[in-house]
Length: 77
Image 1 (tube, rainbow, N blue to C red):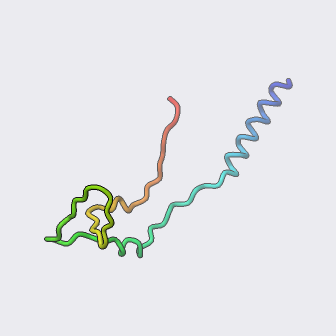
Image 2: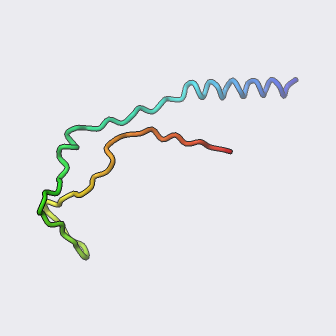
Image 3: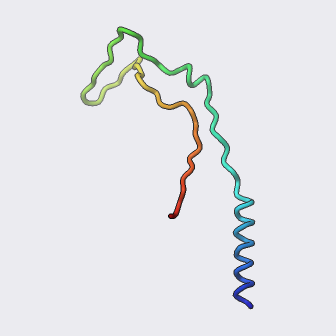
């Protein structure tokens, strides 16, 4: 009888823990950050550097995916 009580209490605690877990919010993209990205103009050269250098006014050819997407991963088999 004692084993079943422990099992029920464990399941109840797991359910309460799951219910009380805070859900993460989706990150927001700031439009001001997007407008400040330096871009390449047609005819502008792209420097190729060797070693350590400081570049002022660098051009960015690719910035990345600006969309957000939730990561859903299945675990177990």
